[in-house]
Amino acid sequence: MLITQLKNREAIDALISGTCFIVNCHGCGEVSFPAAEAQALQAELASQGKVTGILTTDYICSPENMKVNLESRRSEIDEADMVLVFSCGVGVQTVAGYLEDKKVCAGCDTYRLPGFQGVTPLEYDCEQCGECFLNLTGGICPITACSKSLVNGQCGGAKNGKCEVDPEMDCGWERIYRRLEQLGRLDLLKRPVQLHNYATDDEVYKQNN
Ligand code: SF4
Ligand code: SF4
Image 1 (cartoon, rainbow, N blue to C red):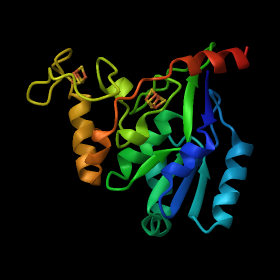
Image 2: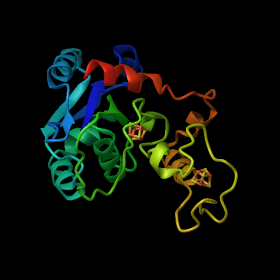
Image 3: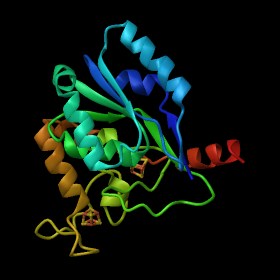
């Protein structure tokens, strides 16, 4: 099982620049989604004229499903300055992977809960780290795309774009650099070093047990 929680309001306000198109994942059997809180927040953003459209569906982690859904809302997406996704980390990466030239942000953090976890093959991976970094990395997960799960940039060991730990794998931080370059957001690499707050995992674990 995993659970998604809304990022705090301050963090969400800081993400929104101009207007946004919102994607909600209804969730699936494995993911608990804060639907009521997300709906209230989105109604408020819409009343402020910040929303060009809202797409609510399930299994946004399915690239084929998402492609069809996103294309059907293309004009509202193009009109928006950014896309704000409320889902687990896999869903956000799926949308960001398809809309490569658009700013795509995560409105939720994803936490691991004890219990059964399915084995559905997915194109993207989320380790449910409890503090989602996708908003700083162009929608590429630094926890799963980097062999060392580094959150503050490259280790310096990559050769010809390949990871020093696994030469079969593209260096996750080189991928992040190229995505941010494509988005014109290399400034995000100049941020101060950030520590990952693993303590939040424990808090959510206790609340749900
Ligand atoms: S940073 Fe990666 S592991 Fe952490 S919640 Fe986001 S997608 Fe999941
Ligand atoms: S080479 Fe790249 S992917 Fe591999 S550990 Fe270093 S930063 Fe991470």
